[in-house]
Amino acid sequence: MLKGKKILLGITGSIAAYKSVIFVRFLVKAGAEVKVIMTEGAKDFVSPLTFATLSKNKVLFNLFDEDTWVNHVMLGRWADVMLVAPASCNTLAKMANGICDNLLLAVYLSSQAPVLIAPAMDEDMWHHPATKKNVETLQQYGNAFLPVNNGELASGLKGEGRMAEPEEMIQYLEEFFQKKNDLNGIKALVTAGPTQEALDPVRYISNHSSGKMGVAIAEELVNRGADVQLVLGPSAIKINSNIKVKKIISADEMYKACMKSLQTYDLIIMAAAVADYSPKTTSTQKIKKKSEEFSLELKKTKDILFEAGKRKSSDQILVGFALETNNEKDNALGKLIQKNADLIILNSTNDKGAGFGVDTNKITIFDKNKKEYKFPIKTKKEVAVDIVNTIIQYKNE
Ligand code: CTP
Image (cartoon, rainbow, N blue to C red; front, side):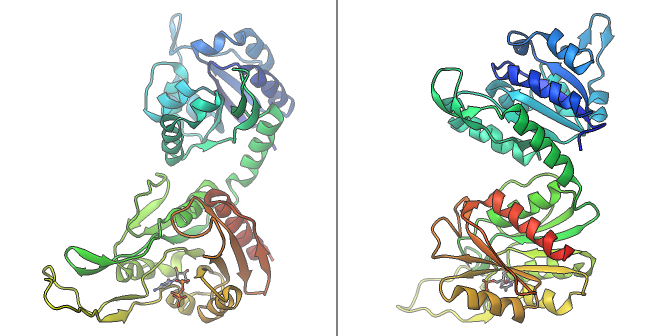
């Protein structure tokens, strides 16, 4: 799996650099080509000679080496993947802010290759809001993070922040190369977020959807090589720049955006919490407070999933969600059939940690062939991986 792969390894100033020595050894043994870039700080922890010997390549430090200019642009283009391991708190912050004061950062900023980051730092630094924000920013740029481990830290304390072990990094890389392209050539449409139905210029009817689940699905699809169009209702979430985004406000706008080129998609996933009703009329002026009671006349919106189910061809895969408060399984199966979906993903408001606003979810997926896939509570990112894997499994059956 790693044979012939070109790995650009960035090493920063952290005691975890010793693990990268073993990691480079494993990579070379597996047949990968490795080039190492070190920051000044990294040299205090491991000698460049060690990395040069193991990688069988000159270790790079500076934009200028004596009288030669190191072509950082071509380095970024040479690599199949750029991995920063260990990534110190300082380098993470610089990457997130586009700072370019060493070769590693110049290569990062000009890299065309996917970037993976293995952080290493003390627990308090890892949990600091500034670091969290930097991690979020880098994820939004499309960079992926290897999970940090819990254990003994350089400070002597125990906690989260240990860099992944060399064996784990090898496994992660293998999985990365395996799954990176499994959706190449697939065109996907994803809906996410709430819709807002205007009453007048200042008021609307909406719901609590944050859009997190649908956006996580769109990100997982794009990370695996799909060409993704996201139709997104009003949501504060920042979107990975590799996803095409069409922002809409109302259910009607979402309907039109989805129907526009529906036939061109191989995969359609409707994760949006679309309003079922919208005001019969929208006042052009602010509705004034007059009488003691006020009734609102609503009309049904178009059911986008239902319409997509009516129009879909046999080789398109259609996936819907069912958010239920009671009689969950029957209601979800009813929606699967009634809306002609291939798969339906059930969320129950009765499950703690599932539903709107939170970062976790608990789902059960039902497919048209009467298969049921139950999953434990997980982060929405992990749930997105389960959803995409289940869709692929369904497609291959
Ligand atoms: N959906 C849609 N268009 C609508 C309403 C819902 O595309 N106007 C889609 C949602 O994106 C979701 C699925 O239909 O994929 C089910 O949504 P849900 O709100 O659970 O069910 P409803 O069909 O709206 O039925 P009810 O509110 O009665 O449960």
